[in-house]
Image (cartoon, rainbow, N blue to C red; front, side, top):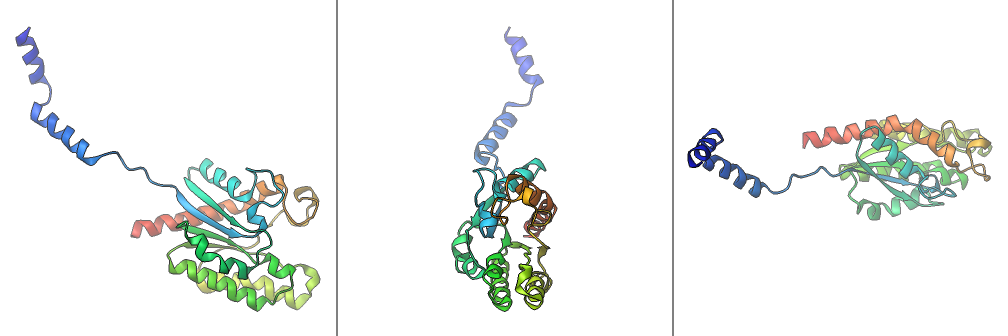
Length: 225
């Protein structure tokens, strides 16, 4: 029996090698698991999920869509109902406390509803984008459109803000947050402004490829660092 046992020991790896491997594994500790990408959604009631049942708001639906496509991301809901671009700028430092890797900036709709000068909206959005870039947060700027009853000049100046800013700051642009949903009564709540559950799904489906580009930019940046 002793001879058989010794022969069996000789057939396996030497004892010293096994012990060394075990020691290395103990010193290495547990295998690190990559944390989800953190995407800040800085916006208005459209981001917040005004009037929607819990779990059907933009950020939650987007996070689920990303996961379905194999992207592990936490989408942080920093939407505030009624917020203007100035309000978004004022609370940006607080929002950055979550240390996001990327940001979706959906602001300006309430500026237009209040008839605020497009030049002010442009300055605020530019300050937000520049601040995000300064702390190495990749940006997806989301465009909005002014109500058409504000006059041709106002509409022209407001609608151009997003395209011009995205070009100047070289950030990703999704031209219109409410694409395919705006003015469609079957996709909006009774107020005719805020998307319903079905409208939210369409918004996410439309913006998803742009968010995936945003994620790709984050990964490329991390790969270089």
